[in-house]
Image: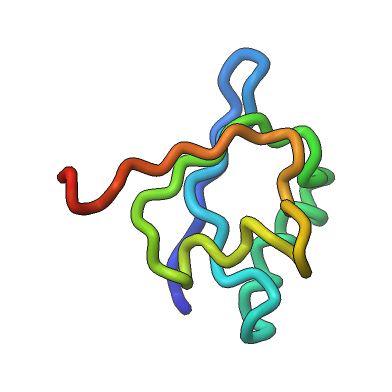
Length: 82
């Protein structure tokens, strides 16, 4: 998948837009690799905004059966409401 996830730092918040495919296809690891390179671990991310609920945008929310971003509040508006 050739899209970018956006990370914004605002005041005391680290806000991530979308989480990619996670480990589902091996390519989703790129988000975690980039975060690691800039010394950002999943735990300090405070908010996650999901732009839409397709698997290639939300699969990174979990690793195994545990939340990847354990301290984040996840925001997702139902697509059909738009």
